[in-house]
Length: 103
Image 1 (cartoon, rainbow, N blue to C red):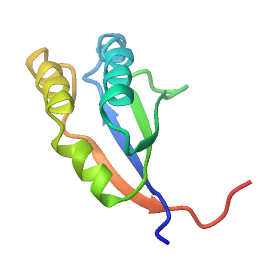
Image 2 (cartoon, rainbow, N blue to C red; image 1 turned 180 degrees about the horizontal axis):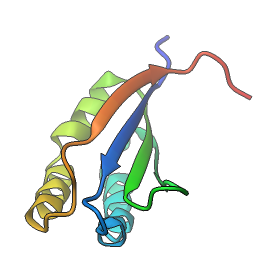
Image 3 (cartoon, rainbow, N blue to C red; image 1 turned 180 degrees about the vertical axis):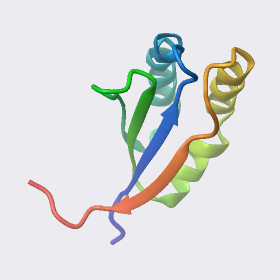
């Protein structure tokens, strides 16, 4: 049986735009929760030392569920809105992981 897929995605706001970028996240999280049953966890964290740095911690049942997320029109709309408002310093840096131990 395949273990769930965990994604760590880093996103950087343009200098001084961290608060504006953070304002997008509650609506985005709600949209993922209601439209992606294959998403097991979707959390956003803000750096304690750099207010323009954010990390997404996401867990999906499998690669197919993550691909659905990546192609989701809801997520595409959020990306377009952020870009149109000039909030991000570039695309997210995405890394994929599988759990090997837990407590």
